[in-house]
Length: 380
Image (cartoon, rainbow, N blue to C red):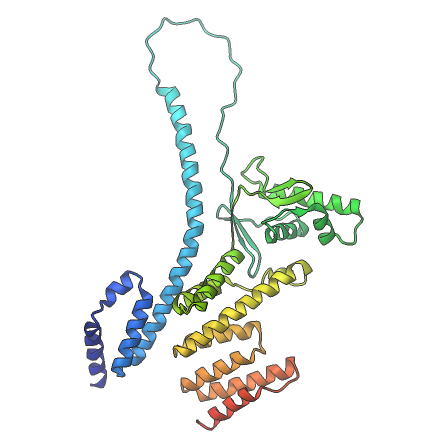
């Protein structure tokens, strides 16, 4: 009976607020819907409160999905632009062929056979430049025109492509590449090795593009061809982080959390995980790792304040994957488990924290962590 009363109150509560929940969902107004649900929850405090809490979490998930869809649409828009250009070129070419076949002229007397003509090459439109999608967070992957590039001439050639991509907004001097990838070789040997690697790399990427050069050499420096359409997950990740930081700084937490979730979805692992011991990638790897840790911290703080304990737990667990000694993440987990009534999990998390700190740093947990443990253990 109590459950039925709660549901009736929930239905009438939406009516009193003058809100059409179906309209808010259909129009994607998830922030307003979250505010409405929280207001309704505060007014009712009935058996439907757990349902409202789940609904709020689903709203956040929908916001996150919309952000991911927007990111993918950006890539799709670039592909559609290329598709329209190629279709236009195809139509133009077919119109030329059709015009030659259907042109009507007045009848003329038959002419004597002409001598055989030397066949002339038919002009074809230049292909549009390729669209490249680079994934550098986690294992390196490259897609050219939506097709994975899987054959590489050499590990050095592949590494050079990653290096040029990392520095793609400015040319990289030939000597820098020689010193980076062949530091112990003579100048002549390093130069020859670089030429061989670049040649093999160009050949591997040229499939279907004739004489198009993905890598340009100019003024004694190499760079990626600026005519190409390039999407890089690192740049998309940082764009979302920047958007989230700006929104958070002005108090717009809804926008901030949505952007942070979108950035989190792009982070599939540490930067160029297969090149973990390459010094040229270490600074960028550390920078991106810090950004990832900070956005997870912001998500934990927000979700804990909103009493969205499941989402706070998910973010804190991801923090501990990156840094098992992140003591604040352990405390967030302990607090969330305690609020959920999972006392055993909260106490176990403390012992996991203590073991990690002892093994990695040879230190004891902070007094704040130990105090939280005692509070949970004593049932406070």
